[in-house]
Image (cartoon, rainbow, N blue to C red):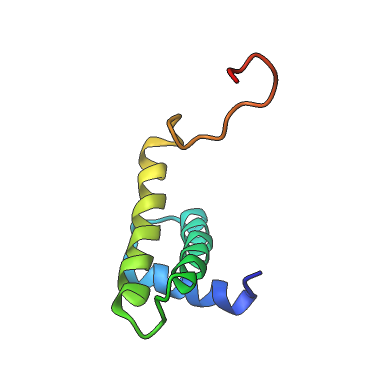
Length: 89
């Protein structure tokens, strides 16, 4: 599980790339997403010394959260299936 220090570093990275485009709640959401992205990147051999870790992943987190903020959550192919009966098998 990521530690508080990871979130603090992620929040700083988010603020660096976002400037003033996100509100406080969006910054927190982008930082949480970034911690998850960093964990996934590490599993694939991407390290903090690489440019993608420092710039591309923070930008991806900011862009994803900013897009949700503009449009709101969307229903789509990545949505979790509804619980309950009546589904196809």
